[in-house]
Amino acid sequence: MNERHRIALVGIGKIARDQHVPAIADSAVFSLAATASRNGRIDGIEAFTNLGRLLEARPEISCVSLCTPPHARFADARRALLAGRHVMIEKPPGASVAEVHALAALASDRNLTLFASWHSRHAAGVSHAREWLNGKSVTRVEVVWREDVRHWHPGQDWVWEPGGLGVFDPGINALSILTEIHPRPFRLTKADLAFPANRDTPIAAELEFVDATGIEMSAALDWREERTQIWEIRIVCAEGTLLLSDGGARLSIDGEPVEVGSNREYPSLYARFAELIRERTSDVDVRPLTHVADAFMLGRRYEVEPFNF
Image 1 (tube, rainbow, N blue to C red):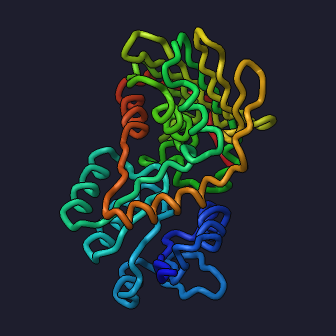
Image 2 (tube, rainbow, N blue to C red):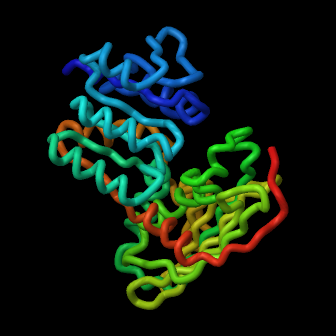
């Protein structure tokens, strides 16, 4: 068996602890060698307070996985690539589309892997949905993504700051799935964005899209759902209706459940990262982030009541 890649995890917050650490521990390809974080650490793993010190002290670490807030990712990703390390970035891959393109160019120039990961694309039902939709006649697409920000981002003010994306932080997961499974390209045509009076990013959004054949598509995103959380994509076709629910973990066709296996999003991400490193290539799809950028450009902003944790 080949020696495992030593990987560093940067940004030890909720997503790193809940998803990345267990996925790396489960991997036969990677071993967690060090962390870099201003405040967090993992028991038994060497910890640094910033990535620069880690890269200097641990030259044998070949890969870096970034879990920091979006506004900090460009500098760290660039630093790691310049130091000759392969890089995986938690979604969204950056605070702007331009900086992701710049990172992709740098990785290509240095023959390194850059993986702009979209974890929801690896949910159990997504690949099955894509296969079923192939060749189907789509007539309508409806996305409903409603969750409680207080549960998923407790006390995290960065989501409300420029670059934090607000409700698009979870909503971009829906867009990542839709860009993966919809048979044709689509573009945003309208956006209504609800901004809390005391915040710089939206708490809700109503979006309209149209695909290359003129099919209308809609998405309703809301961060104020305190009861039942909903993450659904419904695609109506002449041949039947597909429903992805639980963020892509469950799939049904015409109301009948489809067996899709267990949901292993993050182990699948790291398996994909290993594949890309082996092939010395990158995977950088900016379509979901482009749709979000378009929403901010085309969106009609309206003010709602202040939000406080």
